[in-house]
Length: 153
Image (cartoon, rainbow, N blue to C red; front, side, top):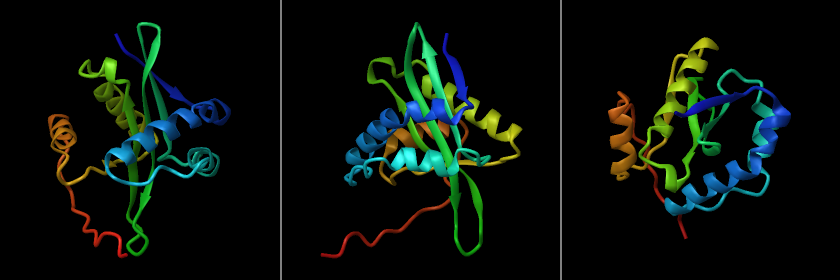
């Protein structure tokens, strides 16, 4: 059985900053993006940990902690549309396909609703069929597409 812990204390959350930065950077590299700048997660946590959209969850299963989920506010600057977004979701590869990611996200939704946050979104590459399929199995829908001109050299 998977236990999901909500990290409520900033100092405890900061203990996870290095691991979160590693997994977020790994995901970015998979997507062909640059690694996160050193200290980016710690800076984010220090600046935004108290916001209702910011949430850090840790999965615990069989004595290990194989999964992490970090959410934070996504804000559209002109309309001021704001909702929580999954910033990092990671399950150790040896523990995947056991419902850990689903449990992390389900708990995130519960806690965010308790905090008055009604939406949780996630950025997914347009051709990442595995992640899109996973979200759709969870009842998520595609809300909008982001167009990117790519780097200009």
